[in-house]
Image 1 (cartoon, one colour):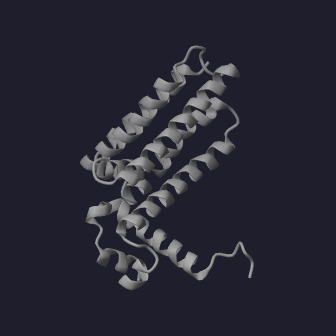
Image 2: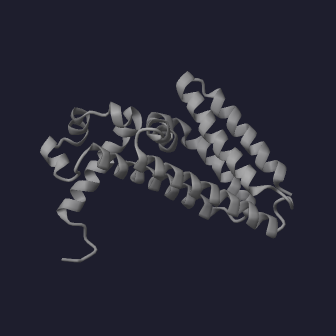
Length: 201
């Protein structure tokens, strides 16, 4: 057997993670019951806990799966852009396209998990912080590269801009989700585009 071919147990674990991902993202860790998981996967309690020691372990793997999908999606879109300025604009441009699908999925996994795990789940809280740090670093690198290539205004504070962009994403997202008013996200993305355009030469 090819060593790169996933084993049956690995395939089962991945199946459970994929089926459980939208459930956890919508209901949270505390709100997701074993019944929810058996319904989502079509597996028995024994099958689920034969692959994960408990719900917390599954929640951690689900978050990793969700974040990997988001990061891969945006990276793929950025690979299509040629300049740093174009890559920065990928964030608001693409989010406009996937916003409704994201809401249907339960919202942003970073925000959802951070809200629940900040005081209750150390491992997940740490993973959220790491995801935000990677996101911030990526934006900062795009800005710094843009300054070097003459696309971005010299002296632009990459740290401040990256933190504002992330805060706008998450703040606009939660308010739009809670109120059901898309204008929160639309206005947020409009402002984000204006912010990015203001630093582009």
